[in-house]
Image 1: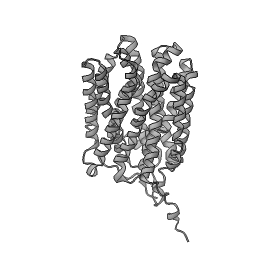
Image 2: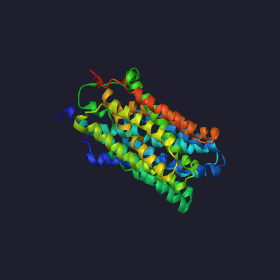
Image 3: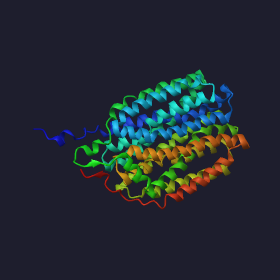
Image 4: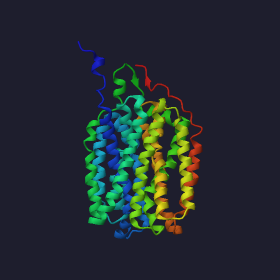
Length: 415
């Protein structure tokens, strides 16, 4: 007779390179589209006549909705499998991006950019992709693996920003958006590689997995988890403001529009370096550096870079140097943040619990994107929002220090 435990064993994981290609490639395509949308903010304003504040509201809602979808996408992925969630998410990103040129009201832009495209990117976003990678890769390689996946998002930004600028110059902004929507569909095959769910981790044994509600309650009761969410809130504020308004900052400095595209590209390029460096630091010699310490250093460095930019003359060279420097810390916070969630609570509910952390990130993102536009309307420049960003960065560096970086207790209950 066959062994029932053997039949319940999880399927053999795909090869390491195939998992990383699927997860990093998906993140590259979805993040590349999202992080390049700031290039269209000015032309959307000109085309619709809605005003910078209204356009910024649509982008800000997209930041919020991207975060709101991730805990729920994570719950669904934990139950029915990451592949199905990623497949649906990629389709929504393509649809929302393709129909954006036909939207001429604030509500229409919120629906296309903020609901469809952002919601789809949340479904095929970090919480689901990081959890799938954690599930399919052995623990010793998870640090560098999450760094590679995170670098995929940065590579997408690096590639898509100049592509979007070139397509806009050659065929117009509407054709550029629709071309980007088509390119996102290249991520669909990744859904097959990433199929499966975290419940399979417990199927081979006799333990009964902890329920989702119990896992969420346990996480929210943990002060270290709450500190982690607070720090990631600041990360979201910073990332969303820069991704949405960096082209506007370039224009306010009376620099050529091409510098806006290349600035975003530089952020993406150097974030690849930062992500790989963070993955190496997490995996080097079994992870000799504490993740909370790395996070504090990243946030403090981010505050110093923004302060230096605020005080420097705004030339093309300074703008590109700032973009490169800020890119090193732009999303390098993701691997250690995801690593801490996995270390605290294990992989069984990783998609759900990291999704909640991503929600905090995007609550900050909503404020960064929206108040970036409002601050410019109120004052005619971005100085006030830069100062707020500096203060938040230093606050985030401090809030990670009390985190207790200990391994969580077992996340399974006796049968």
